Length: 400
Image (cartoon, rainbow, N blue to C red):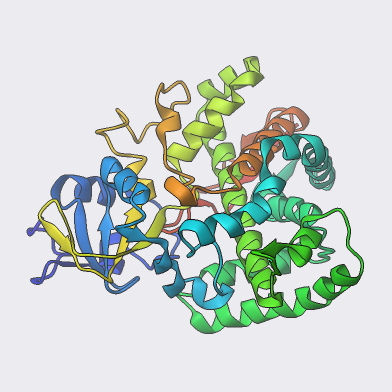
């Protein structure tokens, strides 16, 4: 790949030149770059995003790396979002990670979701659709997908959030700390200021919600400190809201731009699970995951030095032609679509994956049912955008 101008004489790629923007830019199509990297430089040294780092782009290498926690440590997350959310399960490993993860895992189990959350998801979905169903048009991003999952999480946690749009913008600023540290730290403080009085209330009046579970949880006989509880919340709220918001938007975009496959789904609604899995592969909401190399690692002739970040390109892995034939094509009939790594791999596999799938399934099915002849506004030029995170930034639709 030495002929490519984005690689300098020292073998480093300038990330902004390579992808045409910053890690949070609304880049339309990073997949051509990923395809070129997979073929010519599957492990590439990067500068401009998270320095120093090496990006790993092939499916087999990404899976192997995420499974190998001894070589690629999650403690690398402390350098990014960990700076603003504090120490959480995101950067913990081994027994410590397991102990803390067990606190919240029951709340996101399939059994718990079916018994106590599914009805709430249906209610929230209908509440949002009721606001625009009689208008004949909508932009489904600001009017539905953007706050939908945050509303669900707020119900699960017992948080009386009044302004979901503002809260979600805080969450976005929080996860964008690498691009704008000042905004990230300001958002973290706003979230803390909002949550502190609610935590104090739960200490004195425990309820049947996840927030009460966190406030009264114990690890090795000791209750979580206030900072540990706040860390959990600063992690769970943005993570849960972001993944599902982006997944739901991309599913809708895929169906609205692939009419034959949408017709198949409408003829057999049970196919929605296949649609969700293929969308997770085709447009992974979270595109990159970082780990810290604990030792020098040589991969495809390139050495990743100990202490440097290994950036696993989830989005590239899920479009690797070695694993997925014709990978750029959206095809929910694809046999191995569920081999995707959209929710990560190994001990840090996303604990909210069941909730994300349930929310997306209910939301998409209800929208298709309640909005007859749903179609993109022909004046729209919308598409799926982003590098670190991907989803449509708008979905202007007509219906009726």
